[in-house]
Image (cartoon, rainbow, N blue to C red):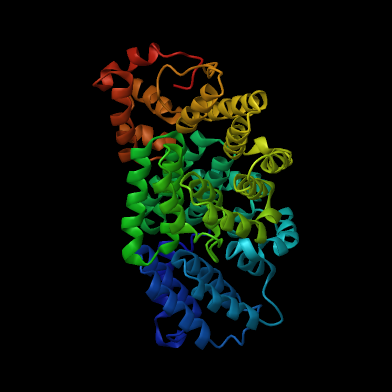
Length: 503
């Protein structure tokens, strides 16, 4: 998501505009003040009130060509999102309605898809397609188009531009704020594509950038990616620690949007370990059963979680109401991945053999394996239902495909659940074709190899665009995994690893 302005630039701008000749209500000064407030103190409420007041009292005549006004409205979008409260969005939308002759395309598309995609997103897709096709190479535009695209699953339409921006950021030729936005977008994109190790690496890089450049406010974005990757991999302790950190930071600052992301990761972690009561509680923090939460875009990502948790805890009425709300929303029209969720929710809440046609429709959507975790979950649901309907052969086929998908992803909790279902069908779960001999991630292996060459933590950090503290933390976790206690033993421990594995 768009991360606002550079800290030093904002400070200089604020100092310059504080002189009397510029006027105290300058939109530029208000925007700079709002940005400094959220990053220094995380004070969403004050930043929001300051910016809204400056917009309402400004002498811009609601001219859509007024650059300062448009920039202020883009920042207000983010403050509304951080705050996570519908009434804030209503104020913003009323401002956009007053623009003459009309809101600029990019600002309008963001207001439709980023604000409340479950209701207004589908209608803005044609204009979003035009924006992604003409995104260009301006860093601000790339990030803002990405902000419009993220909840419509359209980041892949211009992934090349986002990756290029990451490379420019690493080379020092793009602003830090845009580098952060590109890392966030690419990390989310890679998570949904099942490229979890890469998503985690990008999140680590984002945390290091926040630490090194004092962007304290934006670290929670990357903690979410770290938490959701840990959740699906089965590292519940790490996921719980990260989401706890997000909530502790967000609660006193009114950053309710961040708390919604934490709830999503917590629900996924609980589902994986079969704690469906806890999963239901966290899912309800994101969605009220029977309503896809308005102005909470990530509510769409957690909608199927609520349905599954409700079904598995005997809350059939709540599950059916939420599946119906998903169907009544614009979710299915936004992307095949979200349509997969809608159909799966309907299938889970449809009794008997009638559910099977819905599962088959879901898995017949174009290329469900592009989203391997989503597809494997639906195959697991389908296989469970087939087994209960005594269609044993078909159940084993779906469960076998689900197991393979989860094993390839390293989604250990879901591997365990699916293997249990296969055994219940009378078929032993096959062993993974290439079982891992150690539990190092790709990044941990890279760090371990560099440390084994004699590089210091600081030197490794510089090579990998991480902080030296992050390197130290990784090494602290690597030693027990390799059965060693010191850096000196790394070389021998690494030589014993299977060279064909990922660590």
